[in-house]
Amino acid sequence: MKTNEFGSLIFNPFKRIAGWEAFGIGLVIVVLTTFTGNFAGIYFDGVIDMHFAENFDSLKSWLMIPVNIISISVIMWLAGITVSKNFRFIDILGTMTLSRAPFLLIALASFFVKVPDLSGIMQDPFVIFDSISFIIILILTFPIIIWSVTLMYNAYKISTGASGQKLSISFIFGLIIAEIISKIIIYQIDKFI
Amino acid sequence: MLPTHCPSCRSQLKVKCMKCEQCETEVTGLYELPVLALLSDADKNFILKFVKYSGSLKEMASDLKLSYPTVRNMLNEIISKIADYENK
Image (cartoon, rainbow over all chains, first blue to last red; front, side, top):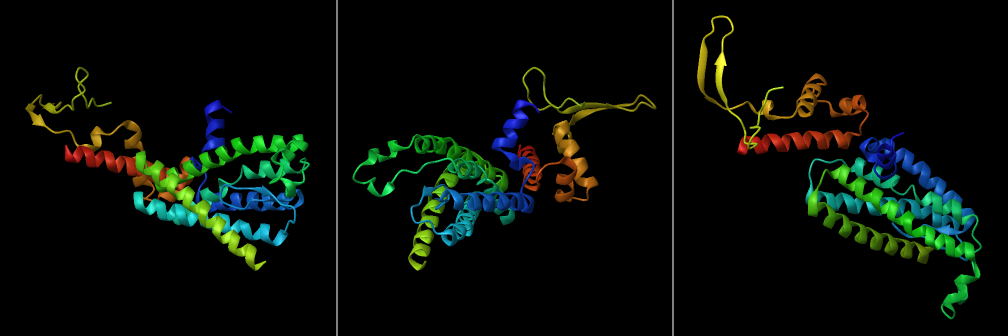
């Protein structure tokens, strides 16, 4: 496979996959991510967020799947309406779901992490240095989030057909609002469980 | 391939002369090139495929092994180019 083809597959698979096909593949990966995260004790509690939990609740982690997917898809669809026309919601839904695929790597890597006692982190932030594996996964998290956000950007670009400044500005606003909304919904779910 | 732009200054060319190969008659004037002739070969091929597929972007996407929105974006770009040529 040529380098540019590989790069395209890794950072912009949406040239070839979108709609229901992307949604199907993305959903399988997201379910696998949550399933793996359940064993590792990691929540994907936001559109671009993840945290290790001490009192892990499996039901809560499964409820985060629709919250994250619907938040990012609906907000990006609304953002898309402001800058483009004649695009399908299923393309946004499918490509945004598939954009969450990199988080599977974090879930898999979390298996090998020894989580330090986080209850005392407020008193002593250096407690995280008790575990080298924890530091490694924190460092690994940044490129994976950047990869996922790059995928979301390309998903938004291909699905809406928007370009230029309108594309970048509406994407950034959409992503921030989607993250805030997903956090609010997850906080509300937290209160009911 | 039909030249559409001046090789010297890149301005859009016009048709000055047409010739009948049968009787050698030449018609001289200054005629605009049709909009379709101004498009690139890739764009013309896309339009031909679009017509052959009865305008079905889904079938085109499947044939070209591209996603539906990618093909729709290609069509939107051609529409935009045509609009630009028509407004010139």
